[in-house]
Image (cartoon, rainbow, N blue to C red; front, side, top):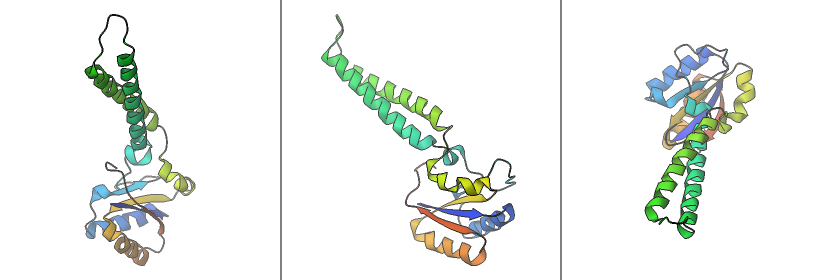
Length: 169
């Protein structure tokens, strides 16, 4: 899957594009619109928290950092056990899993409040009142969809594609 980015001047233009995408069999769940908080999107498919925040990258970083920290702590405890305790491999696994869970939880709490770093280049346009539309399509349909938008909606600025999209956008 690839994510195509479009900047649109108004809600009416976005509605027209959404209608055409639906006719081209692009599912509603693969279309995401992001706008300034003051802009009413009416019945357009709004970007979810995972798309407008840094939630997923933070989750990945937190899980990895927590897992590594827990594993190292377990290995250190196994190498230098506290007096009177026997530490085996199960403790290492338990500490690794518990730390990975804790790292994931704390990192997502932070990631929810951080804007999506992939969307940083669109911040100025969104502040000016433009709408950002993100469309997820198969890599074999990118050119087809871009040509459709260019030919029917000259007011839309095609801003390129991401080489991949997250597994759970």
